[in-house]
Length: 432
Image 1 (cartoon, one colour):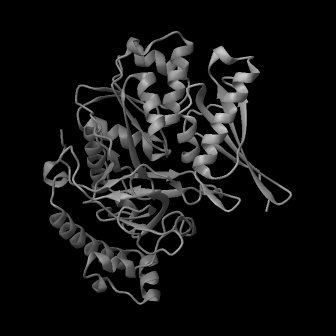
Image 2 (spheres, helix red, strand yellow):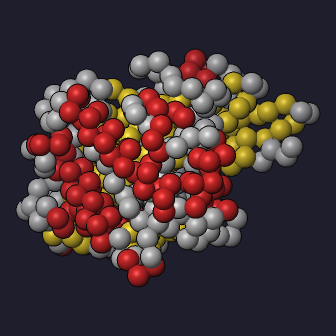
Image 3 (tube, helix red, strand yellow):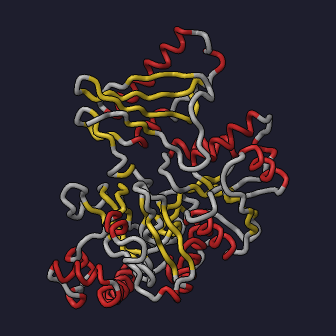
């Protein structure tokens, strides 16, 4: 099923034409209404009239997270405050959050984008969806809430935490779809098992997971433990929130809402376009968001894009699962390591659980990488020979993928910290 066939099955030529028209309008609008853009473009010697092709976007300067912090709270606002319908914010690492605003028109666009994503993931009007994201300034919960309501589904705004209560609601209210982080989905499965439930005791069939990167192996684990169809979705508050892209049931990439968001893939080192099919940093431009235009926003997320038509019938470009973030990438002994690579290896070993922790230290000016995992297989508890064999196999598999030696620590089941929201997998103890 497709939510908006006119847009989601548009030819590549038609989409490019629409994107160029909207890009030209947005650049002119931002130049006229946001002092930040006028100053930046004047300094770069570029005018809105210079945007004659989509490639001309490369003439424009980038926008970064730091620019948003420097212009806190309303420096990017392009409308009077009387036109603001909603204010959200992302968590601030330096004490101040990144503020994002919406007009009524922006809210409509946001809801439409999420509704498309919900339908692509298999959502239906007869679904009962339980949203296990935290409600508040974070865009995830209310964004998904609006999209599911738009297609006619019943929404349970369960918010985060109290996993046992979440499970009670799922069973008693006959929840058919859940929205949460993939790591929290596995925590739910773990708690279900502890309480003596089986997947057949529930009516779950769809899972929409976001807010953190996840591997194919993690999705397979979720599907096995919860008996549902897991799908990824992607968004960020600075652009709109959830609704930038999402997987369809064929799970071959996240369909980008290209009529609203123009995407570029650039080398993080050179900031030049990468070759087709290569991974690069995703740079996004909002084509329709009027309250706070974002033009060439550096997301720091690493992905690749497939422009071929999908088996579902949609022709919109598809993002691959995030390989990681440029600021999450660990450089160990000169080697680039992404936590998602480690996760992909660990989830191939059924003897250990899905929870893990990566600890990075520095001794004698040398980086050390430790991976902590939980022992799940009760049959080998106390069998030091079997545990040593398992440890050796995991370390060899990690070295094959990462090309560096890793210290592996196997701990008792449930010994590692659990998270209700986005999981914090990396502890970097290096001092520079």
